[in-house]
Amino acid sequence: MFDPSVWTMLGQGLLESIYMTLVSTALAYLFGLPLGIALVITDKDGIHPKETFNWILGLIINLLRSVPFLILLIMVIPVTRAIVGTIIGTNATIVPLVIAAAPFIARLVESSLKEVDKGVIEAAQSMGASSMQIITRVLLPEARPSLIVGGAIAVTTILSYSALAGFVAGGGLGDIAIRYGYHRYQTDVMLITVVMLVVIVQVLQEMGTRLARLGDKRK
Amino acid sequence: MSDNPIIRIENLGKIFPGPDGEFYALEDINLDIRRGEIFGIIGMSGAGKSTLVRCINFLERPTEGTVYFDGQDLSVLTKKELYKVRQSMGMIFQQFNLLMQRTVLSNVCFPLEIAGIDKKKAVERAKELLALVDLTDKTYAYPSQLSGGQRQRVAIARALATNPKVLLCDEATSALDPATTRGVLMLLKDINKRLGITIVVITHEMRVIEEICNRVAIIDKSRIAEVGSVEEIFTRPRTAAAKRLVFPEEHSIEILPGRRCCRIVFDGSSSFEPIIAGMVLDFRQVVNILFADTKNIDGKAFGQIVIQLPDNELIADRMIEYLRGKNLTVEEVDGYV
Image: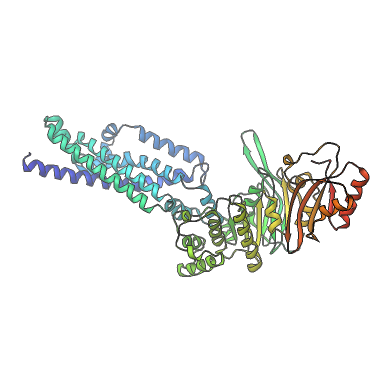
């Protein structure tokens, strides 16, 4: 139905999309996970209550989350240029993706960790566990299934954000969809990219759900 | 005051900031808990007993006074020193608080991991403890696969892992049915005997106290109302708070006004024989049994009966004499209930 070169391009776009999504997710967790942990432990019911710090952190996260991704994409161009050296292509897209996703992930992590029973934390404290031990041996392992479900939500959301990056020549399937489908009216190419995105989302989501269920010993 | 208590609570107070000013959760608490005893702290919900037990291991920092554990003032310790001390105080909870994503074995290993004990040794010790609480067959099960009683036994094994000197039990049987409660209490009693570990039991149920405690403190409205041996408090409660806990539930007894009632306490000094029936036959006068809760332990009677005496004052007086003659503690309760 298409020229082989179109298929090559689509394959290339697919790989780019997956690359951007996975690298961005990993980097966003690098920031988002500690932020999420910080939100939980400094909460007024947390193991290290620091209400002012918690409030300020929450505010920053909310501010970042309220900026529409398309605006953020353009706003952070100077930052992108400083870090990556260019503002087009997949690596350039990773910067705004991480900035947008990290606060979102912080909230996902926060809600997962808050599901951990307070009593279990108290039990660990009664055994003389330090705060670090509580984080690494109680909070994170006990919240594991929920964190994995959160991870699936994060990765699929980042994928859809990455598709938006097509507007600024960010590479990947979104880029193809915009250039061919929107600018050149090649609806068929656009539809194929959409189908590919749907399939990736489906696969990632399913993997996350299964992984979470498999690792959950509560059932 | 004994000379060398394992836990000494001194002038302890805890104030929580509340929406309408400060709230005294605990006020002026003084208690000595002796080495090797099973000490009960009983009170109605909201009396402050859970806060009190959390002050013992400084999960809650008292706002006034302090706690001495094995002679050591806990209020002057650094965080790290406090972590260390907590390893000598095991604690179990109403909701068991097991790690749901870990196996039974791994749960028991948990406090040993925290204490930095070598994994191989930890597993060995954990298996020993699982044998002690009779759960060897559940070693590799997950908590979700266990019943409430089994979960509490895992929690007990876990609390004992670091060889603590004291085991704090916060409403440990309140989520269990009566039969399971008994099993857990017997296990605690056995552990106390075998390992010589001091046990502090927090509960709102007099039955739990009767079953296993040597001494008991009654906590009422943030203060200690009464402290003494269980027999003492059970047979001769002095304060209203103690009476409320010792007496059968008030609302279940309806007493006709103007008629005398008395409470007969069986403290094990009389043999298990039909005393009330014997009295009725001797006097040829009926009494109304309002409440009875007695049990036969090794041929001795324990528990209490509340009866309504006949209208005739003379007979009523003689009946009380008769019961006292049978070595029973009898007190009139008409003014109370």
